Length: 199
Image (cartoon, rainbow, N blue to C red):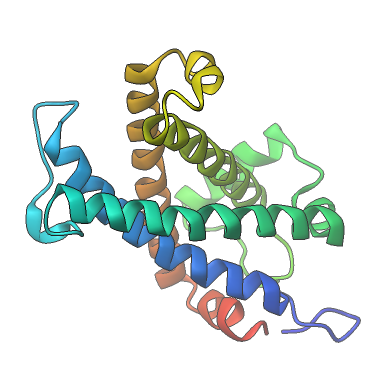
């Protein structure tokens, strides 16, 4: 599917960012679960076979290495969206009223997906929320990584312990988004072709 100008619906830079981000998120979640298991916040832990790193030191190495990929890819994504005009074209205007209408239609299985060149209001809010969530993950992660060096950020987030809770909460939201995203792709499989080939 192409736009009226003949260009792909999703440009190459967006598709590359998407797949880099998907791989980075999976590796960060799995290594993060292993790090969490070393000092749990809550009375549960994640099964070790579903974690990455093998032990705490290995998990930290994976997490910090992929952190750079996730962060730099995210900055590139934001910059390209803003300066290419894609952010304004795809995400604005926003409407709370339309959000509730589209969400209700989605729950009844009646949300229209015929024209994939346009996001419905549920998609707009979901993608914007997960972008903010990614920024929150990076900010809280920096505090956990270099608490002394990022002392101002630590205080803005309410201290080290609060930053851990924020990081866990943001990770949980990301996992929820990831699962819902996969379900939606399964329900509308042509979106997978679109993000792979651009059309």
